[in-house]
Image 1 (cartoon, helix red, strand yellow):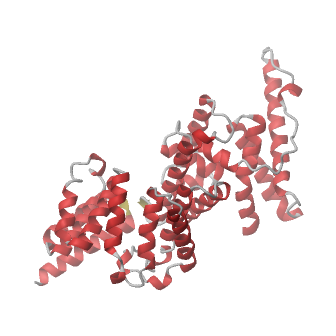
Image 2 (cartoon, rainbow, N blue to C red; image 1 turned 30 degrees about the horizontal axis):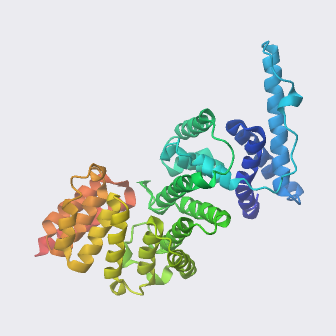
Image 3 (cartoon, rainbow, N blue to C red; image 1 turned 45 degrees about the vertical axis):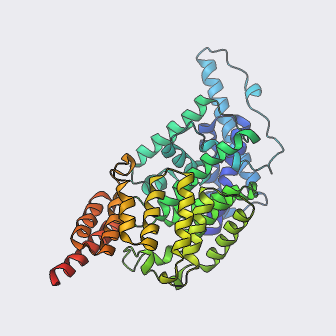
Length: 412
C-alpha cells in the first residue's frame, strides 16, 4: 500500500467510524467493524484500485460487518432462550447520508470530560487519529496490552455514561471544546518533547495533533481558541528540525540554526494568531502562540524581544495558575531584569506540589544560577534535573551542562 492510500485511509477512518457509531450506537463493536473495513481496503485497493467513493465503500463494508455481528448476537440470544428482537428490527438500513462527516462529533466524544486525560488521549489517537494500539503504546512507552486495556476502559466509560452521538449544543460546546483542545495540546506536547525514552521528539504525534486541530478549525473556523492552538503548534513545530543534532542530541533554542526553521509554518502561525488577537479573542493558546511568534520572528537570539515576552507572560499568569507558566515567567524576568530577579520568583515554586518531582524547575534554576555566576550550585542543579527526567536526550544535555561547568570550575 502506497503512502497516499495509507494517508487517505487515516483521514477517512474517523469519518467512517462516526457514521457507523451514529447508525448502530455501539462504539466498541463499530470500531472493530471499521478496522475490518480498513484492513479490507488495505488488501483490495492496491490490487483493484481505489473506488470512486472510498468513504462510501468503507461505510458499506463496515455496515455489513455490523449486520453480521448483530445477526450473530441475535442468534446467540435466541439459542440462550432470551426474548431477543428480530434481526430486521435491530439492523438499521444503510442510510443515504454517506457524505455527512462525523469526525468532529467523534472527537468531542473521545475527549469527553468523563474520561481521564490519559484515556482521552489514547482513545483520540486510536479512533480519530487512526493510530494502531501498538503505535500509541510505543509513543507512551507502555506495553501494548496496557494501552489496549486503557482504550477498552475508555470505550466502556463512554458506553456506561450514555453520551449521545451528536454535536454538543451551543451552550455545551464551549466547555466540551475546551476538553478537545486540551487533549490535542497534550498530544502535541508529547510529540514535540517526548517525556520518556531515547528520542527527544515524536514527530508522528506532533503531526497528528496538528492534523486533528486543522480538522477542528475547518469545522469551527471562527473559534479563537482553535486558531490560537493551531498557531501555537505551527510556530513551535517550525523549529523541529533545528532542535536535535546529528546524533539526536538536544539543541536549546538559543543555539539553534534559525535558517532551518520552517518559514512557511511560521508565516501561517503568525497570520493565525494575529487574526485571533485582532478579533478580540485572548486566551491561553493565543497568548502562548504570541510568545512563540516573538521567538520565531527574531532573526538572532540576541534580537529576541524579551520585554514583550515578559509582558505577555504577565497576562498569562493572571489567566492561569499553571506552574509551567510561572516557571517561564521567571525565565523571561531573568532575561529582562537579571538572574537574581528570576531566582527570586523560582523560590515561590519550591512549595508548589505540582513541581516537586519535575526536572524543569531544577533545570531552569541551574540556568539562572549559571547566568548569575554561581557555577557550583548550578552544577548541582543540572545534576538534580538530570536525575529527575526520563528523557534520555534531556538527561544527556543536562549532564553535559554540568560537565562543562565542572571543567570551567576546575580550570579556574
